[in-house]
Length: 449
Image 1 (cartoon, helix red, strand yellow):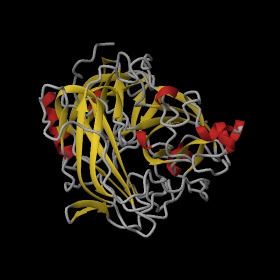
Image 2 (tube, rainbow, N blue to C red):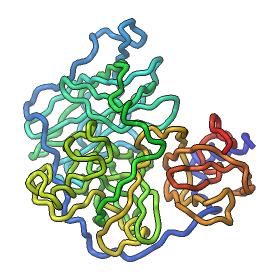
Image 3 (cartoon, helix red, strand yellow):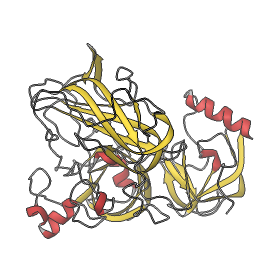
Image 4 (tube, rainbow, N blue to C red):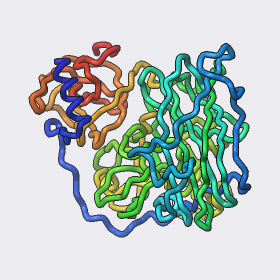
């Protein structure tokens, strides 16, 4: 059985396995109406407008992994670009925006935009804070942002956290693998920043900022107002070109933005008809620094608002911030999430409306273990059998949290068989272990239900 799973995983990585036919449901195809998302945020306001290099405090220049002070420093390779990088090029020794024609749908930018997800670095210790030192030429009106995230033992990633000048990024838990993302905005005249180098320095404070907040066993859920993104043919903040009947969502913060093609940050959206799991591939609506799904104390902005209340909703309903968003615009609806056309109609919306959203990467997970999935339109069943009711669907590869596993109906798919099923508490149902993307048929470290 293990050998079968290894062969299956190898073939899928080579691109020969397209999707799951067993346990699947066909997508609901409807003709999209005119876009209802008329509240796209403008370009990010640059943190500084000087042409000098920007830097955040880091360790001593000579610091190397394994030094006694507990700090670990390294320099990611900026010239190594791949499929999850967006509109950037490395030329003349620097990373730059490739061109100003790409303007993400979510921010309706009047200037060039690009991002690079750098290679992850495995460390020989656990850390919870990362400082950056950036060697970059940033012309007036341009901007460069450095976000970092981490994970431990191959588990789920933390959210992205921005590291600013003199303000290291504090990660919500101890991690042993760190990854950085560079986001670049050109000046209004099209002049790109030029990033020549980046140095990361990580250490352990022993007091992760959210340690006391992570007390629930399930991911955080809120009821928010949803609008339809539409904008077919435009490009999202992670470089995805929006297709008819697309399935993804936009949230108003880069902290939960998945790299292109991945579902590392996904939500479960429940509407009038059904629920759907969809990846976060865009940033919006209204705001771009409103991670309202986080505890108030760790929210990037609007820390006086309760967890689960989007700033746009508070502005629209209660006149918060003078009824305006972070850019000073009058808020015309209380939207806290944008849904791509396919997701919008699939959950049962015909007009903008209220939905229940579970932010699947949030909180500690309690007695759960996170695993990646593969396949498209994979059903989650009420019981460990294909005859039981469907309680949810995974439309794309994502990360799920598994509490326990059982022996159930033997499932056959494309020549492979497995009778193990994983219980997903965020959905209240079971999925065949065939679609958990690990070599083992019986998930390691997961107890029997």
